[in-house]
Image: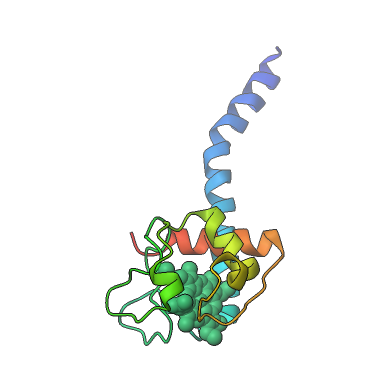
Length: 127
Ligand code: HEC
């Protein structure tokens, strides 16, 4: 390896984590805009904001249908799983099929990139 190549390789290694952080930031910001457009009119992520649907603060890892004080459909209250990134993607894609009997209006977000951005945003709030 030449000296120049070594310097270039070292620089690339040093830059990698910062680059990954920057990508994460972009995904979270894009997810926030998408969430604002498609979800925010029914869901807040901050308990001080009004929320018609359940608060989604800390939703990744939370058991479905368990936000205290919210009146869920029987279907979601009895669903018995915890929200993972995969579950959230399936829910956004077709919530009625994922939990038949849910009272959330169908959103139908089928683009995996859009799903991914919204999940990144949701994973970034409430920890
Ligand atoms: C028209 C209002 C409305 C819109 C728009 C909406 N939701 Fe919902 N959402 C609800 C309601 C109502 C429930 C409760 C469903 C139930 O009890 O069956 C819910 C439930 C949920 C839950 C389950 C929460 C829990 O505590 O288990 C998640 C996750 C969720 N919504 C995500 C989203 C996302 C992400 C979007 C945007 C892509 C979105 N919702 C758009 C009304 C909405």
